[in-house]
Image (cartoon, rainbow, N blue to C red; front, side):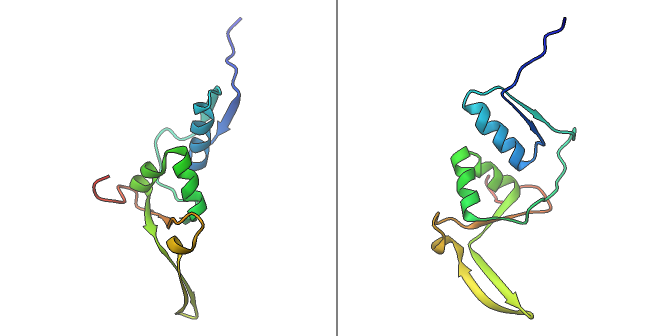
Length: 116
C-alpha cells in the first residue's frame, strides 16, 4: 500500500492569489499543496489594478516588494474621464485609509522599477 500524503489545504491555481494564499497558510504551519497547470510562467494580467487595501494585504504577507518589482508600478492618482475629458483626479495615496497608492499591473513583464 502506498503512502498518500495528507494536506490541510490544497490550492488550485498558482497565480498571485493562489500562491499568496498558499504561502500565508504554509507559514502558519499548515501542510499546503499548491497545484498549477502551467509548467512555465505566462505573463497574463487578470486584474488591471490593485487598490490600496490590496497593497496593504501584500505588505502583511511580506510579498509587496516582490510584486512591486516584478509586476507593478505605483499609481498615486486616480483619473476619471467622461466624454474624453478628465472630470475627477483623486490623490489615492493621501485619501486612502492605508495611505498607499494604487498598483497597476504591467502587461509586458520584466522589472517595473530600476534597482529592484
